[in-house]
Amino acid sequence: ISGRILQLETVTQSEAMRRRYRFLSHFPLTTIFQLCEVDLSEMLPPEALAPFMDEIKNRANQRKQLAKKDRIVTG
Image (cartoon, rainbow, N blue to C red; front, side, top):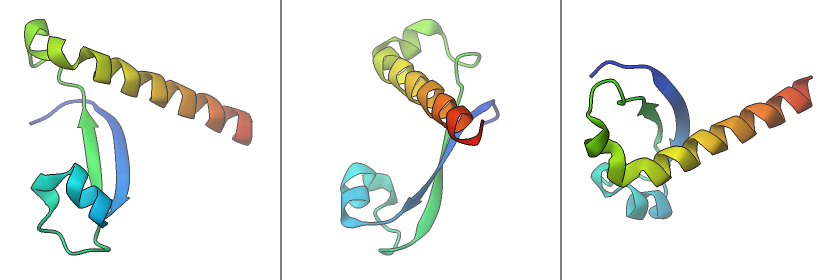
């Protein structure tokens, strides 16, 4: 898979993360790993993304707010 990376999130494995990301539950507790959000809009048809549009828009808004905070703090 190739595409534009939208966000990298560093995560430490915990019981809560195991419940949320069951496909990564084989990682030992306290393992540090990264989750990568990739823009798939150019690879998938709009109807494939439609069920996830609310989450995609929410994540985009969160990234914008975080960028705005970073500009204010470092500005």
